[in-house]
Image 1 (tube, rainbow, N blue to C red):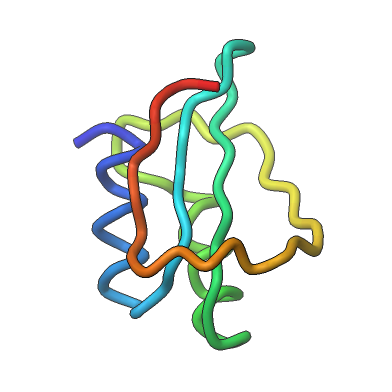
Image 2: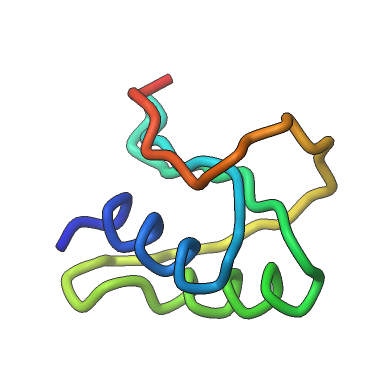
Length: 77
């Protein structure tokens, strides 16, 4: 399973909203919205990622809720 599909699965399991997408520079970006404990758990999980992922760094920054109803896999930005 690729990172984005894995992220969608993990976010839905944690009842999170938002999105994940690839960036043109090869990185992955996500907006994760939900209860603070669930967001923290998702960030911790992202540091490991799926078994074939090579996660180098995870950065967190505050963001506004964009109104997402689910957690989506968006096209590359």
